[in-house]
Image (cartoon, rainbow, N blue to C red; front, side):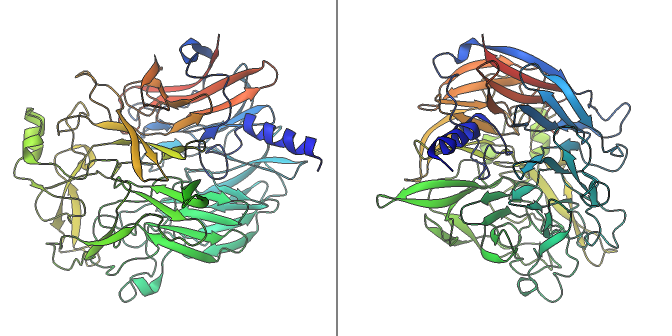
Length: 599
């Protein structure tokens, strides 16, 4: 390839958004800078597209919708998925629909939420395919030009992902809510599974040939040697419901795995429970394990690895080091050598509390990174309780624990809650300053374990203590501790220190920070763009100091990560975000995909 073609390819990649996280390494960074800190206040709505796919769980469909998708921009077309798992292609400058594909998801089936986060793209230079999985367990390959299923893939364009994974568990959940990873001609798939019962569908990771749908490899996520007895057999959970990252140069795929099931009690799965809650690096061609790093041993708090790992570069002793950064629900950031999995900052195995539940054997230590400091609250004192009747009632007679205090037989208040800390929105990265940006919330959880003598496998079950799904907040979704309740944190990855920290979000009580779900976007224009908060706002922050410099109100809260692209037709940079509200954090629902550009 001539130097001219190389330069053209690099420029084209910078103008597109061909992966969920912008690039295969999930950095959520764009080199575009037409929109910058000096003119961002001149942004206006370029177009709004309404999907029609919306449910408040009270009318036509029994489950709520969550519009969490981040679109792709590939070869002049915008592609995204809806909460009903439809895929839509738009003309990116106008929002005009080009085609739509409907997998006919059964919307009355038992889902926690009707949701989907996005699609993947593959090309061999001639053909283009949009590849994605559905919430009911099908994998589709669609012609990117027409939206028609590829007849050469699987059976008429789709695969049944449940086969070989959910055998014997016909009534149990198995599907995909996040996009697969693409490596060469492989589609690497995780899964969404139920985590409430000890036995269930497999969480193994699989790779399929993108042309034919043939299975190429399968990685077993349950290591029998780390479970007592036959505790690994048919163990539920241990899946990847979030997004993998791919190092195309080294041929590695990085998997953020989740906890074994049940997620809040481990009496029948004694042991460290590998590869639960581990970042696992595999040879992308073969599925062979290269290394793993477990972030929580014997997880009994639902502290899944929820976010895509970021492939970053840091400076060590004056030299660049290829690293992978993993943010967590617990509020820790683990920074590891990409080739070996060794921590780049010291991680100490620290003694933690024992369980008070008969038969439970909490792991005696947990890995605590010395740097960076935690970016989310990890405990609270009773005197920090907000003096409202609802919060006083929730906290009455409760035990306030520190991080990794096992849930006990009486009401236990713990931080972070089951949604973090950080969640699937993850982090973004500025390569110019080697800075990682992560949004987080400080919403605790409150559970207790109650005996169930008739259940031999799980004689204790977690019960939410008079709150919405065990979350430590009042009826207005205001956390019960004193604010702030949400932050945006800039972390210098070379030094392991905070560059700055800003409160993120408002409530009717003021600039308190707010619960948030969704990620951020960093651009070479010196901006960090983020929705995420449950206050219906879309914001821009100055990368240098964390100062909020632009805010607009959306049709509903944007529980999704934004993206950006350059249009050669209009010679404009666009920023696009999904605003669907609802989810777990808002009672306002919408179906809007909103694009912004300069006047």
